Image (cartoon, rainbow, N blue to C red; front, top):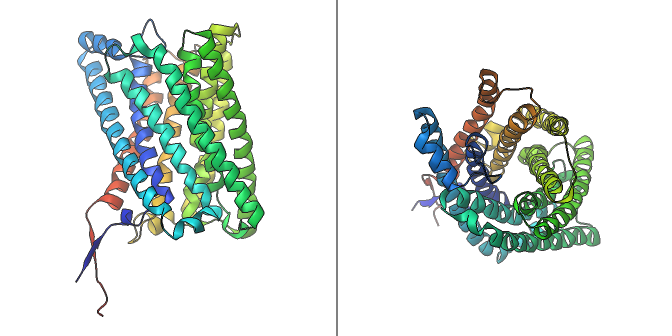
Length: 401
């Protein structure tokens, strides 16, 4: 008799990235509202701002708002659905014999997809709450301490995992340099970065100097640890690739630096705003121009590096369209989302902020169309991967007894 199966039935840690990618795309749609809808009185758009803009907007503006809500709502739901599914499958995996093997090897870094995914859940919830919940801003000062506690708990969890991960590998000597030819070891830093960018939100948004100060301190601690760990992970991966070659199935991790740069960049922008509002540290528009352009340059460099190796190894044919697709392909969504988000900030905060670009002019929309195309490509990629991994079951023959 045949059995029914699908790739997602064989769960592995890279499937955490399926939820992460959906959450990231949800945030890209929230940025449409953040960058294109006026929101006087507070630094982020809220439900009332969007409702007012929709009521008085042109048909094109109304269509943009409707698409933003559709994209944000759909992918936020997909993120929550995949997050719950991953938590259930991870609980089963922890009870399996294979868990210890993953935990005690290089692949243990993939388990940091858990706090990375959970941090994205908090960030997506905040974005969706601002867009969908009327009157949320009136109680937001009560929510900031709760959010800080949630992110602090995730930070402690991640740091404990990092300590256990490096202790296991260093004491037992089970780290294998021949299988380290990727940037998988950067994933713990990515998890910390996602936590840190959420921690920094109250620094930019809270009217309380105390809350903003706590957010600044906590997010700075996380920022520094993430940067140090990422630097070590990149150097380790480069040395392993030069000596032993690239681990083909982990090629998407070579572009982990792209989303990491995005979250750390936004973290520092939020800190800069908090320092300006509460602590008298003032930055000029030219500072954002230089800073965001430098971050974009780093992203372009690592994107080119990763895509060239991806093409050389024929990754798409081997791990995306083959009969046995790899869950690691979900890692390709994060760089595209990270690039799209940073381009939003580069165009609106750097170029427009420095007076180099007129907002909503022809050149503005020409540049914006680039990030929208990247965003659309990531939407199509996520839908294709979900269909490939979670879609129609495949029939497999069972050998006769």
